[in-house]
Every structure is written in C-alpha cells, then in structure tokens.
Length: 98
Image (cartoon, rainbow, N blue to C red; front, top):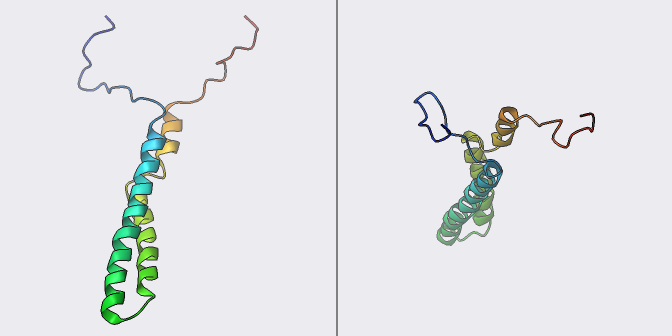
C-alpha cells in the first residue's frame, strides 16, 4: 500500500536540505548577472561620454537590482517557510527515560 497513487489534493513531499542552496545560487546569479550587465552598460556610456565613473554606478545599480529581484521572488524567506513546515523533533536523540 506504500506505492499507492497520490490524489489531486495530496502534495508530493519536498526533498529536505536543498532549498537553501538553490535559493542562494539564485540570489548569487541575480547579483552577478546584474553587475555584469549594468557594468557593461556603464562602460558603454563611459566610452560614449568620455567619463570614467558611470561603470561604477552601473555595478552598484546591478547589485541593487539583483537584490530587488531576489526579494521579489521570495528567495530571502524560503528558509523560514521551510522551518515552519518541518518543526524540530525535540526527542530525536532520546532522553533515556524509556
């Protein structure tokens, strides 16, 4: 009976321990991608306008944009949600009273 089909209202159990890693990699990707893209845009504007500071502004804008996107996708709150669904088992090691 362990191999029975799940009904439409029953959800599949999620694997534990990989949500934080995946969220961290997504945040890292958003930030690094933002830095690269906006620094290149700043570098292009620096070349056109004969300045040297817009590339730094572009990098800072990329960091801010990456953090904003990560927040909008809920990547900073994933661990709290996971902790609420899997409360810690206080009697995991046993207290020897059995």
